[in-house]
Amino acid sequence: MNEEELKKKLTPEQYNVLRQKGTERPFIGKYVHKTDDGNYVCLACGNPLFSSDAQFDSGTGWPSFDKALQGTVEYQDDHGATEIICAKCKSHLGHMFDDGPTETGKRYCINSICLDLKPKKIKDIDCP
Image (tube, rainbow, N blue to C red; front, side, top):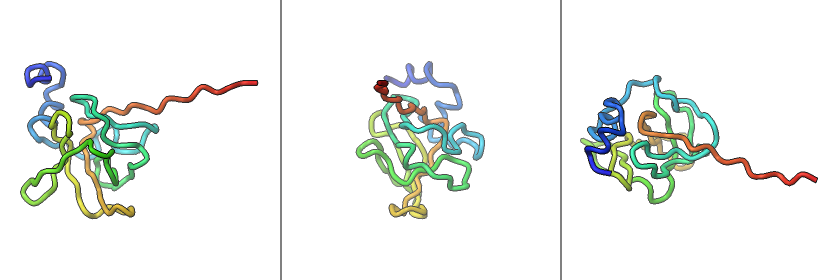
C-alpha cells in the first residue's frame, strides 16, 4: 500500500501517529487496558504484532507489552529511545523501554491508535 492509499484508508490522527511518528494522548486509547484475548495487528497493514498474553497494565496510559511476536517489529534509535516500527509497512508504533516488570525486562509502549485486535476464535466443541 502506498502513501496515497494509506492517507485514504487512515483518519488524519491515525496517519499522523503511524506515518508521521506522532503520539496519541495517554489514557484515551481503546486498548489501554487489556481487553479480549487475541493478537494485536498493525492498523495500516494487518501485520500481527503482539499477543494479548504479553499485555500488562503499566499505568502509563498506553497499551504495554513485554514482548512482540517474533520478527514482526523493527527497532530504530529515536534520540536515545528505542522506536518500534512495523516490520512489514514501516509504520511507527511506539517505543520500547528497559523497565518492564516481567522476566523480559521490556516495556513496549504502543499507541492504541496503531493497533487492531483480532480476537481468538473459539474452537468448535464436540457435543455428545
